[in-house]
Image 1 (cartoon, rainbow, N blue to C red):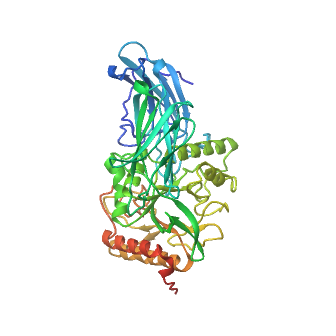
Image 2 (image 1 turned 90 degrees about the vertical axis):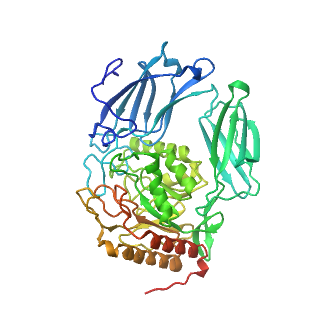
Image 3 (image 1 turned 30 degrees about the vertical axis):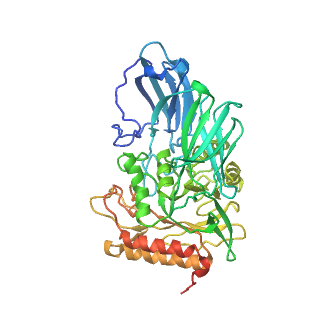
Length: 528
């Protein structure tokens, strides 16, 4: 009920974009309601007000944000994991100094809250639930833009058609638009038209994107003409993902060929930044470790990352299973369901152009699950170009492209059905505490000492191999890439300073499994 603190100097300082609960923020405590305030100046050479508009961007604020510039409310947004923007040109005042105020409300799992999508965040963290990440937790930035400027691009590869479908969003219909694809400096195709209708950009003899060869094309788009034109650049990968029958079983196929998705569960938490990686190098590190260990996939577990994370997955070559952040484990109200679907649509829209993302996971282990087959069907309608995993773990929705089970230590025995491939969405959880590199609480499924760690891991992987050979399994997700707070079942410690297994042995075993699964008829089923 407070009015924004216009013109007031606030008592504390916070380092954005780190959650207020994190050490890096400088605050290190939870608040469910807070004001952020700072002043800023607009560079004169941006020519804002003289042919340019000023756009203010928030990459993510958890959970509700009200934004004021010089006391004028310019944005009101609900959603903890998606970007929102505002044109603040008309709120600027004469002179150099402008004032930005952001009011934030984040109930997390409070009993009287709105039950927003929150993933693993809990006000009272323990076991498999962790410290909340409230407030501004991704980058805040501003830019001068043309009056008719591109908000986003929706880029959909058409491998059989040897083309890219490029849809310009955020611009009024009827404005001239040109899109040109490049392979390095070489132009491979150009399309022209007008906004409001998708362009088909030719990509002859497409160089396909895959984990072994994550080839990326560049794209340049121009909207409008002359000095007022808006020019943006992006990239895309040419690849297809589907489920089809191979050797009598439904399997996942990448670019028309069988592929086994060997992944880890990646929760995206850091001890100093919580939801926010301390640096871009840290953001990339976990993905680079996946590649070093021979994984070809990663399950981003009930969290959505900044765009840079997906850039690294696109560039390094990892197949991403992208989860929708779960609501709390209560029966959600109709209002909470509507918000969940709204935030899922925003997640899909924002990240729909990343070639690395091949699966949308709509629910995990029944947490906040509702609607039977409704939500997976919604996701498939929003993005028919990718696979849908309706329910990872249990409470199968009966639709989507994957039948998914969890088993600890497992792995489970996922069976393909008449229309869906079978995957183990979680297994493993081998626990190992490294003194000096663990939080004081512990939560593990299996206790082992360090000398046996790699052997125990490879024993589980042998069972995974058997499921591929005998039952046609298409994927397995090992829990997990790093320790997180009270969980000590990571391949890396929470601080990323210790690597628990023998990296070379894991890489060789993973690569052999992925290679053999690409030709399932060559695999021999050995039981017993």
